[in-house]
Structures are given as structure tokens and as C-alpha cells.
Image (cartoon, rainbow, N blue to C red):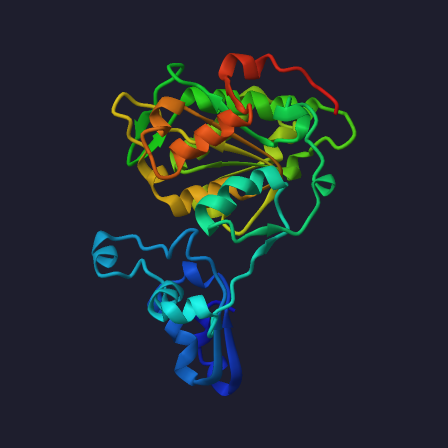
Amino acid sequence: TTTISSGGDFFSKFAFAGILVDEAAQATEPTSLVPLMSGAAAFACIGDDRQLPATVKTQVARARGLDRSLFERLVSALGAEVAAGDGFVQLDVQRRMHSSIADFPAFRFYGSALSNGISDSDRPPVPGITWPERGACRVLFVDLAGRQREESSGTSTMNRGEAQLLASTVAHLMQVREEGAVRAEDIAVITGYAAQRDLIRQEIARTTKRSDPARQVRIDTVDGFQGMERDLVLVSSTRSNARDEVGFLRDPRRTNVLLTRARRGLIVFGDAQTLKNEESVWEPWLKWVESRGGLIGAQAFEHMQVVTY
């Protein structure tokens, strides 16, 4: 059940020996306390305070600290005890990503404490994309610099150039028939902006037939996709402006989610010049991708041919 529902009359009829809150880093502190109202001998939280925080919708709530979860407060309060492992366990084996996808997040967000619990052979290359290092690296950044600037859409942001290239990429992948090719249910398109999510959906609908499997691809915001994964993830960073403002992408927790959803391949579309202005994550990540041969221009990406490794 949810933390809020646990406060209902039905659960008041029972006495629980233990309470376990999953995705605890995304629950606000008051809602995390609801299950404890009936008491329990043991209480455990499972979560990742280095990914998306609790969601609050007003500035007043944020100013009062309600965007901080009980999980985050406990990790912070334990301090030295956390380092000693008293009451705290860090899961340090990831079994989702190809090692090249995991490399940067493991170093930047988890202090190189993560190891890989799967072999690279368990995550074969996605056909239809020319991956760097003849498939040994599964991360690409497609630079659309100067091609299309972002636009405002109410309180959100969108980028038509990115939406068009993403739509054509999805359509291309649906035509690949090689062994190991991804299906619609194996792909996700993620962005930080609701307006961009809607624009990509519209662009795919505009350029495909009603029966086209491309229309079944999951397209969502990063907040809506936390906790999920796909074989291939396409990220629309959206931001491209002369002010070098990156908006939501300045939050390293949101970036962490964007970069860790893919199992077999990750392709980020964006304006490198704008993203480089965010120096804590995006600038070093772009340098890392470039060092692996994965930073390419949009025109070069469009002319990639289907390859087999």
C-alpha cells in the first residue's frame, strides 16, 4: 500500500512487527510518518537520496523543507554512524546497465562504490546505431548546437529540433530487423519537461501511421520514469539558449535518473554548448563521452547506417 493509505481504518485493525517503506527518498517526511502512527518494533527505509527527491508543488512547502524526505534526513543525521555501517546498508552492485553506461554515474554519484553484477555480454549492442568503440561503449551524445533553440510553453520548455530528430530516430529503430533489435516496449524517451514530452508524442503521431509500433514507445518526463528501465533510452535535454541556462538539469539528482535508466544503450540529444555551463555533472559527463568517441553532430548521427557487430 502507499504511505498515506496505511493511515486508513483498515490498517488500524492490525499490529505490525515491522514496517518497510520502499522508494523512501521520494516520500515527503509527513507521509513517511503515517505508517508509524500504529507503532512497530522495526522500521526500515529503502531508497536513493541521490536520485529524485520528494515532490512538493508549492514554494511555501519547499521553503519549509517538505521536499526533504525522512530517508534523506536519517542518512544525514546518522553521519559517522552511516560510514561505520550501523543501521545503514548501501547496495553496491548494479545489475541493470552495460558497464559503459554505469561508468560515469558510479564515479560521479556514488564515489566509485558500485560494481557491475552483470557481464557486458548480457547487454548486447542495439542494432541500428553505430556505437563508439565498435560497440564497447553504449553511450552517445548527439549535439544539436545551433540547430534549434528552445521555446517557452507556458511554464514549461520545448525544443522542436530535438523532438523531430527523436521522432525520426524512433521510426528508424522500428525498421531494424537484425537479431537483437529493440521493439517499441524496449525503448523509452525521457525529458525533463512536460511540454517537450507532449511535443515528441505529437511529432511521432504526425509522422507515423496509426498502426506504427513507434506510437507504443514510452515517452515521459524524468519524474514520471524514476524506478523504471528500458533496453534503450533516448534523452531529450531540451535546453538550448544563448543564456546558457540548463534549468531542471542543474539538479544532479535529476541528471542521475536520466543517465541510469538504460540497460543496453543510452543516447542523449542536446546542445553541448548550453549543457557545458552546468559544471558539476554535465560538463564532466560531456568530456567523458567525448573521450569515448561518443560525441557526434546531429548531421553525422542522421547519416549513420545500420551496422552489425
